Length: 134
Image 1 (cartoon, rainbow, N blue to C red):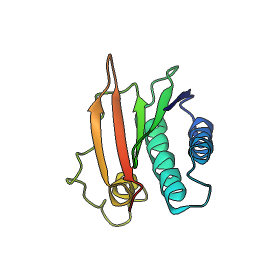
Image 2 (image 1 turned 135 degrees about the vertical axis):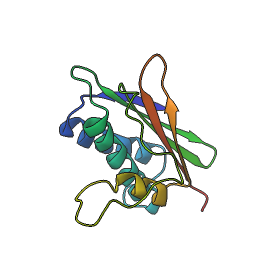
Image 3 (image 1 turned 180 degrees about the vertical axis):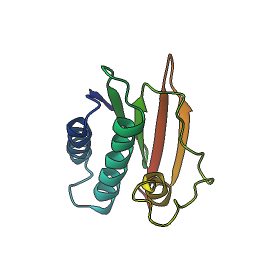
Image 4 (image 1 turned 90 degrees about the horizontal axis):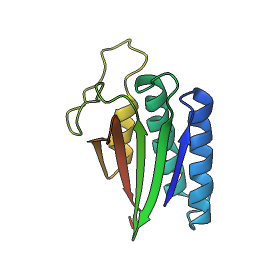
């Protein structure tokens, strides 16, 4: 398992993506592979959401990666629990002309499973899972 806290800034989100890819490479998921590229997009999107929508001044967000048999689990936690995203399967496209609001649609499309979980003592975790055997 890999777990690291990052500052709730765009720089922290970039660093999270870079370190996640490095860890995956050490685990035998090479840079540039389909699994690595997909994981990079998932970490980048979830970290950007944590920085943008889950930021509490002075509080970090956390990225956890774990490899269970042939499943990669990506957990991104932030300290803001009251602003929860829509549940899996209930996402809708934003209205035409709106610039943002498509990040979790990417997460839903790229991951095999995803969920929003409560985080103890405070906050939320967005979890995305990739089946590496596909």
